[in-house]
Structure formats: structure tokens, C-alpha cells
Length: 416
Image 1 (spheres, helix red, strand yellow):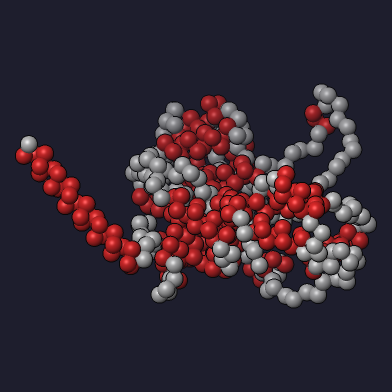
Image 2 (image 1 turned 180 degrees about the horizontal axis):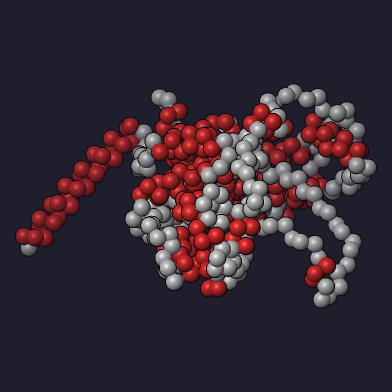
């Protein structure tokens, strides 16, 4: 089966209420921005836990300030509220970590990148999901047994599709959808004309519209399997792999402008991009697609395509030495980033939350996070050859000839 992950389930809720101008207070509170909450979870929560909560946490609150809950910094301490959302210059916490009037934390001054993260957090409104009562706040654990009963953690089971309602839509997935439509009393639209059908198919598989000649040929093709033939033609086109790969490369946080630690563009990220494209075009089985990206060097067997080593670029992308003067922190941030991208793209889970606490929604304890971090701690970045043994031997021989010629030319010029 082709790897086509473009099936999007979209639910649109239309409301008929009107809001008069000047009555913003009548609007319901907007839900927190997921991107801002994510920034807090990845950057600010670890920062506070490591540098602030020893003196301003649940047990100790020096100067009356508590920073382990949102209500704590809103209430503030002896000097008043610690943060004014959207106003970093007026926020006491920002002034303190910046050295005005005192340097906090006193024993281990925050490096500039962390101060910049705090300032950005306040600028975007200081989003903080840590709700709780300052008086009765308790550490909450997770019920692993209850969490594992959630539907997405259950083993895959064989389910018999409902009976077909429409003979034109008798495939198993169509039968499930039709059954839900019937339950919701929803009627599907009429059948699309052939030109529209080909246009939808072409955009879905390649991201490109069909040409005029392709549309005309499909409209005039009266064969019973004309649609199947159109599918096969599009699946066989190189644009299929390019379009499908784009979806995965976004999950893998791929960028054409990947930079190394010395702020110079990396030379090899495109090899990972091309490998992903070729994997889709070659119809690589999905399980092997994932395994090669996690550990191609361990899965490789004699006779395998050596170019599959480029799949290891999945983890080589992303953070490098983020904190030049703090190797321990740089390593920890890199492990967290790799755990995050692996779990989001391959498991659909935000495992990185467990870096600081047991996951609040999924059955993932902190022990699981650090077990994964231990795996990444035993890995190292390196450049591996993608050629076969014969190709590498030929390259080495040619390189020796090139080096000898360069030496000879250098000696000649020196003598002249």
C-alpha cells in the first residue's frame, strides 16, 4: 500500500451569533495558543525548575515569591507581582535576572540565551498552564493503569466494516464514513464529474493540477479502469514522492538552511531530503521507513543499499551545540529535541513533557523520558559514507591520484 498520509478529517463548526462593535468584553475567553504553551513547556518550565524553584517553589518561597504556579507570580512576593504579561521592561522577574537591582539567581547567573527566552515568554503574554491553589497545591501523579486504557494505547483489533450503503462507495473506509454520515443524518454531495475527479486526484497525490491534455484524455477515456490507470500514472511520477515527502519533512523539522555550530550552512542535509523522496517513490514499507531513520546503521545487512544510511539525517538535523560554554546543558537540550521530534512524528505523543514531570495526559512517567535520553546520550554525530565498498575503494584510489597531482603542481610552482 502506498504511504499516503493526506487523509484529513476536517470538522467545521459554524456559529450564528453576532457581536456588536465595542463589546469585546462579551466575547468568551479565547483558548490558549498551543504554540505559546509549547514554548512555555519546552523553554520556560525547564528553566524555572532548574534555576528558580529551589528558592521559589512549593517548599521555600524566599521574599514571599512562588514560581511553581501561575498564581504564584501573579500574586508576587514582598515587592509585588513578578511579571506583567506583555511588558518585560516593567516585570520585576526580568529586571532581577538581568541584574537590576540584583543578580538572580545569585549563585549561578542565567546565560543570555535563557534570559532571552524569559523576555520572549513575557512578551507573548506569559502563557502558563500551571493552575492550582497556592494554599492547597499538591503534587499530582498519574494513573498509569487508567492511562493505558485510552483507545489509542489499545492493541489494533480487526473490526468488520458496516454494510455498504452506496454501491459506488463499497470500500471498507467508505463504509465506515457512510455509516457515520447516516448516524448524523448527513447526505453526501453528488458524484464529481470526470474533470473535477482528476483534478482532486492529481492535487492529492502530487500537489499539482493536471495538464489540459491530461484532463481531456481522462474525460474521453471510457475504459472501466480509467480511474485506476490515472492513479497508477500519478503514483509512478517523481512528483508523487516530492509531494508526500514534504509532509514528512515538516514533521522531521527539515530546512534547506540547516546551520552548523559555527553558523555555516551544513553541506549534507539535502541527502536526507532526497532519501525521503526516494523512499516514497520506491514505495518503501512504512515500518522500514521508520526503522531506517531511527537506526539505519544497526539494521543494515549485507547487500542492503548503502545509501539508506542517509536516513540517519532524521536525528542529525535540529539543535547543535546550543550553549557553547555549557556542554552539559547543550547535550540535555539536544536529547530533549530528539525525543520530542521522534515522539511527535512517530508516536503522535508529546513525550518531552515528561522531562520535568510525569505526563499529565498520557501514561508516560519521567523515568520513560530519561530512559530515552540515555539512548541518545550514547549516540554521537558523525559523517558516514553512503557508497558501497567498491565505490569507496575507487574514490580512495582517485583521491590519492588527485593529491599526488596537487603536490606535484605545488612543488613545480615552488621551484618556479
